[in-house]
Structures are given as structure tokens and as C-alpha cells.
Length: 334
Image (tube, rainbow, N blue to C red):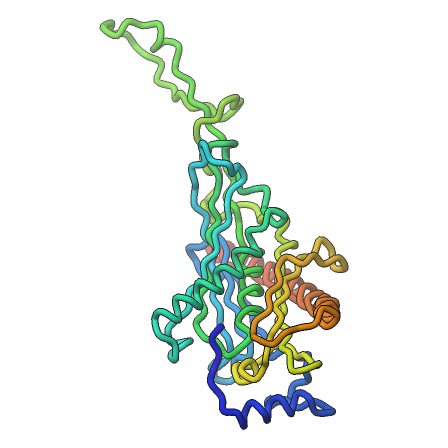
């Protein structure tokens, strides 16, 4: 993971502040405080779900902070002969060169690959797979493409990526489908090809009682539909930044550069009180003892639970806001 370069004096000063009693951080936050987080869903008009998230952005001029744009696009995938039946999830993370001006193109590609792998391995786990991505059993299903763009990185990019991804997946609508079966008209089968007779011009496609679906149709508009099943189970992540025996949250780039190691933990929740570890990764070179690691994992449950509940409340507010906006737009057409 890329970080900014700081001098030994800066690194020593930041670490001394973290270890002080009481601890000191450059922006005045306590060890477990996050910077201001702003979130908006439905920001990409031609996607099936989208979200824009920023952490630590200046409220006056909109500058600074970590900024993520997430978008979900569904496409039909032919799965005949494949082992899958209920659709797939494909994640991709792209980084704007302006967010990492100090990185070469090769290093930027490596960073994008690493971020993509971390996100994809967690979100594509079978335990999180939505059950409503199937269209026609063993023939067609939805391929869910989740694309995220890092437009600015001011630290804590992993947490921001998972928050933005969860918001975009929450916002996603899966188009409703209706199976179609084709039945050849009997009159065509029983009539000689060289006889000129009136034929039944009714369509051979039947959507009423479908025994062997051959295709499907969309009864609604492409941007309407139902939410992803189990959307409340999508995970959240927290990064514990370690300085000797202490840890702190939501590090800036300078604080990340002063840490010997960081622990990334991804939790999903069946309920607000029962977390499941979906993924875990140690970033950095310093070793962690087993007892210390166990205590950090336990403490991470508290942080992700708070993030989970706060994010759910914000997403529900966003649903209400967008529904009100849609009703106003519809009323304006009358």
C-alpha cells in the first residue's frame, strides 16, 4: 500500500503523540475518532446502483480528504455449461493518477490490483451472494460489476472502499424479469410448405405458463426492480493502525507512514450483535503476538458494529430522500 514519505523527525513526533497520555493527534481527534464522513447514493444516472463517499473533506471548499465513487452495473451473462447458476460478482478498483502523483504507472497498477483483490475476495464470498441474480436456471444470470474509483487518497482508503461499496450495493436495483417460452404454431407444422393458406399470425412466445424458458423479458424499466437480497449483510471494514501497544483509527497519510503495521479486519453481520470475520490482513512489517492479535480482533468488533449501525441509518435516510425526490419529480410531470 502506498503512503506518503515523511522524515524520521515527523515519524517520531507522530508516534510520540499517539503514545502520550493523553494521546495527541495533529487534527485534535482522539485515537478512535473518525474524520467527517459524507455519503450520497444514486449519483450515477446510468448505473443500477451507485454511491459517492468522502472522508475528511473540507466542508467549506470541498477540498482534501479521501474520495471514492462506486458504481454497480448489471449485465446478462450466458451460463450454459458453467458451474455457476445464481450470477457472479466482479469487483474492480481504479485509482486516479492525480490521487497518487508520486507513483509510477507500474506502481499504480500494482496498487489497483491489490485493492481489487482485497475487495473482491471479501465481497464475492458465497455466504454473501445475493439469491436474486439468477434469470433462467442454468442458462442466464446477472453479472454484477462493482467498479470503484479512488479520486483522492488522504488516508484510510480501505475503510472508505468498503463503505462506498456497501452503499452502492445497498442502492442497487435488480431488474425484474419474466421468463418466455417459444412454442411453434401447430398450423405451421401440419401444412405443406408449397400450399398458400392463411396462417395463424399470433406470436409463438408464451409468458403465461412457462415450462421450458428459452428467453426472458423485462416487465419494468431497466432502472426499476428489487433490491439485492441480503443487502443488509454486506460487510464493513476497519483498519487498526498500530504504534507499539496502542492502536488508532482513520489514519491520515502521515499517520499511516508512521505506523509499523496495520490490521485490516472485514466484518459482516447477520444481526447487529453477531459479526462474522470475512477477511483479515496485516499491512506492514512489524510482527504481532497472538494474544495481541486476539485482543485487536475483539476490539475491532466494537468499531465495525458502530460503523454498521451508523451506515445503515444513513442509507435508510438516503432511501427516504430519493423516494421523496422521485415523487416530486413524478408530480412535476403532471
